[in-house]
Length: 317
Image 1 (tube, helix red, strand yellow):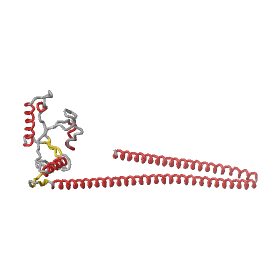
Image 2: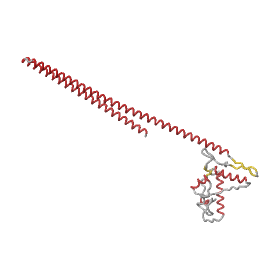
Image 3: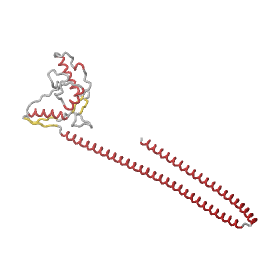
Image 4: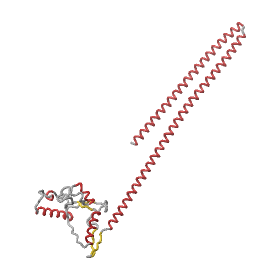
């Protein structure tokens, strides 16, 4: 997760900080040891110089005694010159040693400054990377918010369009047809059709008819009437009619404005032609996988006759 990754980065940074602290402590310890070693060398050098001075004094004393005894003043002067040369050589050697120590210290300071500069560059790079990452996250968040806002606007626009279509569809509550006998009203939609908040008057809807309602009783009466007719006449096929084998478990009304409008247009054309269209209830049996196609597009005689084709292809009722 993002929290786990962030925690891992924090742990990694803490480990790097601890490693840098240990490295700095080791450097300080090495520097302290180097100072201690140089101080020890300096003390030893001072001790050697003291011993050399004492030895020189002792030798000088002996030489003076020899010179006094032997009267060799020239040798004394030569010894003084040798001593002077030794002092100059020691002073030059000391100067060289101090210069070497100064250069070594300067080199150590340079390395330390270099490490500090590298560390500073690394921290600046990490800070810049964090800032860029935060900027990317902020831009991605803004893009997501913008996309969500556009999606909401699209949904709101679609909702308004559906409401407008629904309002326009509701206005066409009836069609007025005129023929030789006068004017007749043909309903664009039955009055008993239902409507809910999700309904779309341009698409098909299924609504369950409550048991005990007049509509349900009317369909039950149709089935009972068909059963009586089948029981009264001979059965040439030799099978038990389905009205004897099944009970009506659920009744659903198909509300398809497009199909109903086609039906009403045909009915109005009959009325205009001064014909008296007869309307009857008819029962059609089919498989479950074809019910949705029938409810959406009506009966298609090209696909009918899968279960019984006694009189050829067609819609059987």
